[in-house]
Image (cartoon, rainbow over all chains, first blue to last red; front, side, top):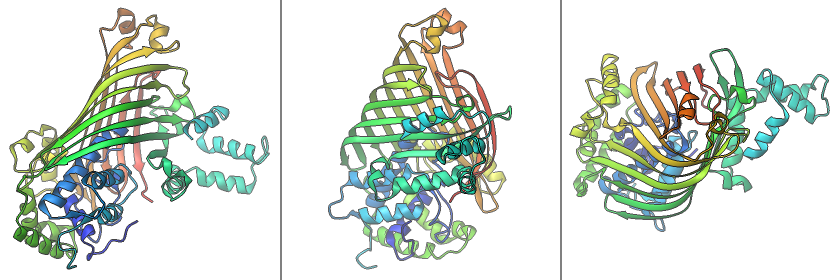
Length: 117
Length: 385
């Protein structure tokens, strides 16, 4: 599991974005271990192709919010496609946690204010 | 790995409990066939009896930085299959979805891409008779997908980005969910983002070829077809599109009545996701249609719809209403096929599931190649390790 701290901008942005997208609504302190299978979109009855469709929609929207609304930039050597695919890879694994997703986002994005944090 | 597991199941027909089947298996390994298993074997059996144990071990193997990493897109979940007649079976649910090669293009808020993909999924039960969804599906596909919308093109100003940054610093320090939801910081943060969200339209079209079979591969059919997945999400709760999500109206009412939401708020974020496919099916000798007297190729429409939305908060957990429905219809089916009731298949799963693992579910119907209808009720606790 990735490190979950209030000073990590990827953790903060991942948490608030999932709340805005109605996928989770717990406090920051209670969110690190929340599993993907507890997110609103996840249904155990879905086929694999259904799950990937939903995960891709959310991954693209998460990227939209990070980049267009929150001012994040891609880390050097990371493309938009790679960042989105990294999110999809986490969102299609039910046992991954919000902290895992934040860690992956931390590797893909440089968040607004990161150079000063 | 999947085929090896199926072969293993074939050697050990389970005519009783999963634990006994595993006991025989372990006994056989230790040369104790026909005798009581050793204490070590019994210990292994006891630990293996829980699907969660197996899932935890398997996850560690597949996710680790090891030679097995090529299987990291393989999802295997050990589980019990329970039926209303008291029958209980042990088995695995498997799925593998992988884009072998993709070419993506991102322009503004539009993302387009193409990919060669493989997909395999299905349930395998130790005792095939207990498999509630005896249907394996293997496909290779060429996909084209596009997402448009989601956020306004102009984005936010630098001043607004600074404000969001500062609000977030405040939000992470709030200690309870109620305080968080009622805080001015969340109201402002949510408003700044929500007002710039638009409706996102994602579609994914593909041409596919593959094989469908039951778990013993005694019934098989080849498939060539096309399918479209459509996922529309009205992320902005104030948008007119959000109010079109009529499926969420009962959930919104329950959320209001239970105090989960402070008012009647329909969520455009839970709009159902839809997959529609048209397949040309080429059956082989032992499929049910051939046995009924029609061995011709045929066209089949398939639809899968999925909807999930929160309905209440209870003891610190969120309770979700969850529906998945699948329908298969043979177009222009012959009288023989219709008389044998093989022209359409449906499968519906309804569940109330808590974010902490407690669930109640009902599933009914059958999939193509499944020999019979099943009705499965389940209630229990899925433990998150």
